[in-house]
Every structure is written in structure tokens, then in C-alpha cells.
Image (cartoon, rainbow, N blue to C red; front, side):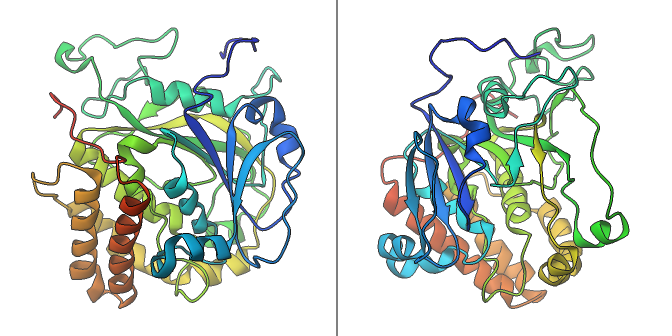
Length: 359
């Protein structure tokens, strides 16, 4: 259970940005004020740039709309999606902090089974600051949580763990379902609170949801590209999925960890399943080709940074998935453009080297 609130300086106060994509006024921040107000916010406004987005008083923030993105990136702005929450990854690019927490504006503060409000950001930070265990599964889940440890039979040579690059949180109330599942289970709500954090094993992919997500920008930031989605593209609602598959393959190669489980947020609003189906239609078919592609990807040993891994992935995407649909050739090119733009805005770092002594 999380420690009671204290008057101490919030964890990573000057080392973490909160990135929020939105098309509306951010009234939801009032609920999060006790947890978010000490931190800097990066708000990425999607849609009409002439619309004014209202942010509650007292928050430290910067806001970027499409005009700002075009001005900052110039021709490379083509890699940032429009009319899709995938635009949030622009915030990752312009941040200068080591850590990122991103949340959707329909995500509210959840309560644990005792009725206590959950400080999702604090739990994400705890996940990121403790090692992961991707090479051997611990049956008590995260051995670094209070009251847990490595179980009998766990190799001592692997107990140091590896750096954690990603903390993937979950949701109470509205589950993150695809459109077909939404249509057949319109009233289903997630009421199960599972008090667990676990490392996703090496070689195992997962569906990454971007609405309650934190990551170490220095370790994995350049791979957190949410793809080409939304306006003018033949696919939507696969932005975070695409990023998750690319990130996991890169983390596996570089010896980094990905955790999932706590913290929970309260997902307040179900999106329209018919609209979602139109967005997801191609992706539902394509993922049957995409998943085997990522499962079989083998990155060369000379890919020792995230950027090198990602550029290699882009080449493979064009070569292998370009046969599925021409969209993937365009996406592969956008992946390279993203890396070029990232390096222009972050010339001194943002590149993860392979940690020593990892499998």
C-alpha cells in the first residue's frame, strides 16, 4: 500500500513532465491537482489550432497546437499525426526531462479497494525507479515491492535486474477494448483491482495503452513514436499499440525492462464503437501480419542505441510490412523522419546505450 501523503518534495519534481493530448478544456485536472500541480505539464492540442484550450489556474504548463508543431519541426512535422491522440508524442520530443507520464483527459483519479485515492503518478515513479526482471519470471511478481522478494529457485545471477524503461498502468471502469469487443459487451466494466506489478518477459509482446503510461525518456524516448494515425491515414487507434511493439522489441534488444499492472486510473468515458470500428478496421486485419513481424524481428548487434534500433526497425517495416500495404512504406519513412526530428531537438542525448552485463 502506498505511503501516506507527506509534505516532502514530490518524487522527481524537476525530472518529470506530464504530457496530455487534448481537444477540450482541461477541467479534469482539478481532480488531479493534489498529485499533478507540482509538476510541469506539456499539453499537445489536437484539431483546430484557433480554438482556445482552458487550463485551470495554478498549473505550470506549456501548450503546443498544430501551428506550433509546424513552426518547430518544419517539413518534418509530417511525422506528427493530426486529429488523433498520437499527436502526444510531440510532447515527448520537446520535453527536456528524464521521465514522462502521459494521461488522457477522460482519465480520473481511481480509488483502491479501501476507498483511498490512488496517486497514479507516484506508483509509476516507483515502478520506473526499481529494476525489472525480464529474463526470468518471479512468481511473486515484482520482487522490489514492499513485502515481496525473489522466490526460491530464482537465479542469484539475475537478481540485480535491469533498468526499467516503461511503466504501463491499467484502468478501472471502462476497459480499453477494441471496437468488436465494445459492440458485443457494451455494458462491461472493469471492477477488478489487482494489486500487482510484473515485468513483461523478454520475447513477449503486449498491447500498450497510452492513456496511463510512464517511461524513462533517456532510456527509450526515441522509440516512443505513436506512428501515422488519424487524418489522412488509413488507420487509427493503433498509435499506442505500434509504439508498444517497437518499444518492446527495442527494450528486449538493449536489455531494458517493461512493467505492467499498478497504477490504476478511472477511465470515465467509452468512445463510440462504430466510430472506433471505422478507425480500427484495417488494423484488425493488419495486426495478424504485424504481430508475427515483430515476433520475428532480430536487430543486429551493432544497434547499440535506441536510435540505431529504430532506424533498423523502420527499414524492416518498409521491407517486410510494405508488402501488406503501401501505408507501411509511408510509416517506415515517417519513423526515420521522427528520429531525425528527435535528434535535431535533442542533440546532446536521448540515446540509450546497452547496459553492461545484461542478457
